[in-house]
Length: 80
Image 1 (cartoon, rainbow, N blue to C red):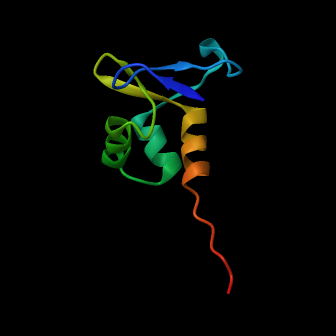
Image 2 (cartoon, rainbow, N blue to C red; image 1 turned 30 degrees about the vertical axis):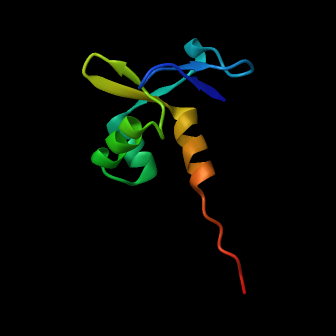
């Protein structure tokens, strides 16, 4: 679980990995994993749906956050 703290900032809640063990991905890498455009990733970051940190003028997204977002967004298909 993440706790919001500002528009783009987030902190690790108890029980999650320490930040020195977190693998961060660039926007281009996230877009590749999700098979979407970089603009879509920027929209997800700016809307708060995908947590990220800002490094200079670029964003870095925790790899685990990408997997959690995809898992939570999964839409199952029910058979009739």
